[in-house]
Image 1 (cartoon, rainbow, N blue to C red):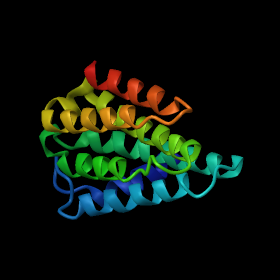
Image 2 (image 1 turned 90 degrees about the vertical axis):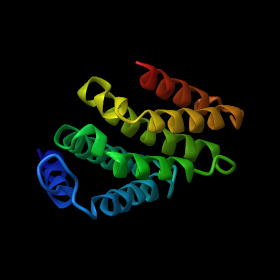
Image 3 (image 1 turned 90 degrees about the horizontal axis):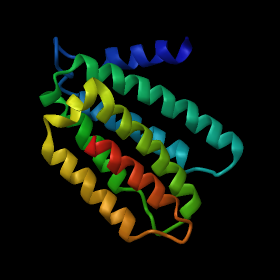
Length: 161
């Protein structure tokens, strides 16, 4: 399938020697996550959501490949970029649009957390703490829609598993 092929291509861009990311792999991960965030925050139209859904699925498959191939204690660049993007979501503006962005991030976080039965996150307790802190922030700044609460609580449950 095309998504799997592109995910494999992206994996080959960031892979280094066995069990490691390329020395510039974190930069590439950041750039791809920035592209995903750009697609998820441009519009709330059905076409934009469909495009973002495809890109999110692609990035999710790519991250699964990374998590299976890279040793868990060497995934810090991946976590660093995921958390950077997560913290940059502006929850004070268009709540519905950013709720969709958070849903995309939730998908990616759950992908990484669930890979290797949580092993990708278990080796980095500081990451789990940072994700929990960001979730607490989202819960405390919840807009009237309540969608942030659903995404945050669902992600929190995934971390605690």
